[in-house]
Length: 241
Image (cartoon, rainbow, N blue to C red; front, side):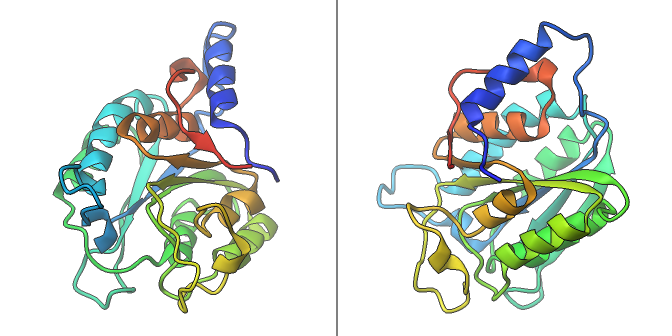
């Protein structure tokens, strides 16, 4: 399914907020899958700019207080840990009410490390939602691509086939694509700077949103996990079709 425009989605959410007393869909639990891999702590070409993790922390502080009062959200982090570089997938907690503070605190405390097991992490988040029997939303925030040999496109097909009603949204944050990575076997399918994780959104009817700034990332979080009552239509990132 073609990914929706984030700007259009935000506008619809804002319009809906004026027409109905309660936001639809907020009863569906969500899992946030957060990229804690080593690249989140890398310095770019401009060494005066903050690292991705610094900006992502700010986006979480901005967005989560708008989201958590209306939807139960859980958190899974991949990257840092004591296992091998691909083995650190940490389900911090399943969907809970008022998750803003625990999510913000967890991201604040992250020390990025390790590689990017996208497919395995999203699969585990889906399991935490009991996706075969219950509706759910997974929101993946990543700065890169599968680097642990997983196959996000194949996983997207499997989730679409097996799930009761699961949507995976993918937020790419300052993504840098490595088209020649040996441990990213599906990347050749994606051009124009998109992470292969876009497959997960394409195959499950979700949105893929490309973001470059704190504000864009915060707005993408609001649109993918938020409700109509808290939608905003200005200053959002770019959704890939």
